[in-house]
Length: 274
Picture 1 (cartoon, rainbow, N blue to C red):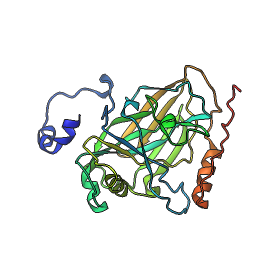
Picture 2 (tube, rainbow, N blue to C red):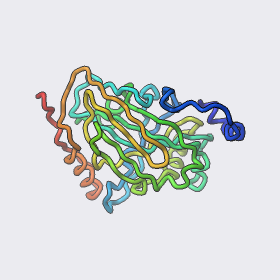
Picture 3 (cartoon, rainbow, N blue to C red):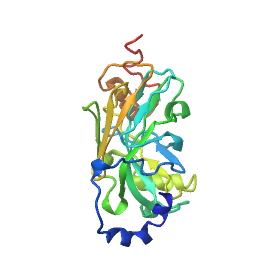
Picture 4 (cartoon, rainbow, N blue to C red):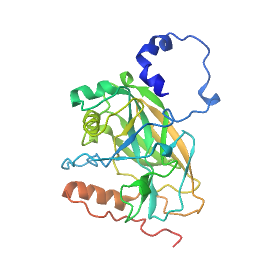
């Protein structure tokens, strides 16, 4: 896949001219479109949370490539104790050309395409945004495919939605980003060299965020890209209230408005089985 991304412009005429047999989507098994990204850089927050809030500094963290999961796969919640496991529906950018110290004006020319990402997160008073909160295997479902950059003229005008067991949860537009895609690429390329197949996930709007738990499905849909569903398994069968985490979402919004970050409280501090 990495070779395909690197050589896409050379291969494109033959791909577009293809006139052979077509296999129906329901007859194939989709895999993560980039099975093992060289790097996955994840945006921290990066949304105004639908309020007129100050722009926070851009921050990103690394998520291990071993955490990728295929569309239709199963997110397995680890035995590590936490207050809740959350879904974070995000727009993900797939890099197509090597980028180092690029400007915002140059940044989008380095994009191969866009895909959906669910950033699964363990919430804990001690984990924060770290490997023990974000890095477990299956914690990065990616898919269902990559929509090439030319099919998305404006990545800042995309509706993002997700559902847990068909219950509507997150519903926001990428126009709410604090730092747009071009700024994210430029900033990241000033820290590390971005290479073909690397993935930059743009952060999430936390309004509507909620728990993921055993036996449920989690679905993400991004306008002009597609829809992907994964399953959730918890060998320990822990249970949380089946509803959006409104207290956590409010705390994030209050932090945005106030400009100081405390430890977000949320309604799931105590599980139902305690």
